[in-house]
Image 1: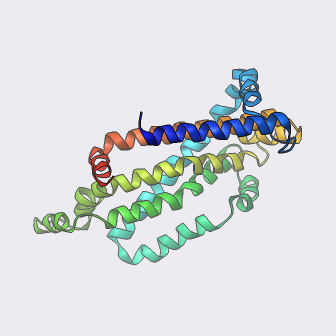
Image 2: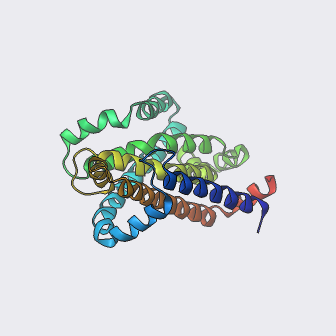
Image 3: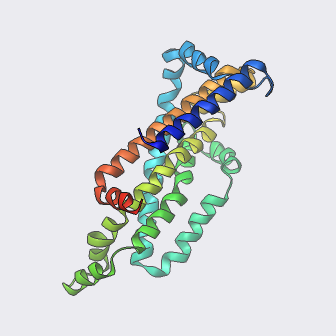
Length: 252
């Protein structure tokens, strides 16, 4: 076991211990539930509760994550192929990052019914992160490889397809890892706008009922789902870009 892993485990144990003591003694306030009660509450609620809400949240988050990333990658590709679009695309990306989700959520909820609001907010949440990662990755492509494709008669689209996208794949997947928890956050905000199902809607109900343990339990499950999604994308990154992992190890 490496030293870094030991330090991480030790830090996690310290945080959990402080959290447990603070929750049991109440020194941090009545709104802090100890982790043992949180886990017991999740087990007690079980599939009867989470089986009703988790699929809705995962569905909205997955669809929004997919479309947000696709649009971001397409936007980054358009910037590289058609340079005069750069200012417009980046301004749209900055606007999507600067507008508070909680401010546009009520407007979307008034315009759309059901999980559509959550899906749109998830897509908006991931757009800027993936856009920036994709643009940076596409611009770091090897110039000699680009010149070689052009020398064989390839145009902008051939260079993009054969050189730039492959070179940018590590950066794109790294951005998509960061986008996973952002998609969950956007989904939860959307579900809190009057939806009947979903972890965001359940979180609002638990808060209104002052059910501290369930509130913490829902937050724990959301964090767990985001962590699993992060690990899934990380696994895809290692499989799809093995050369990037080798370069990172050499740099370390």
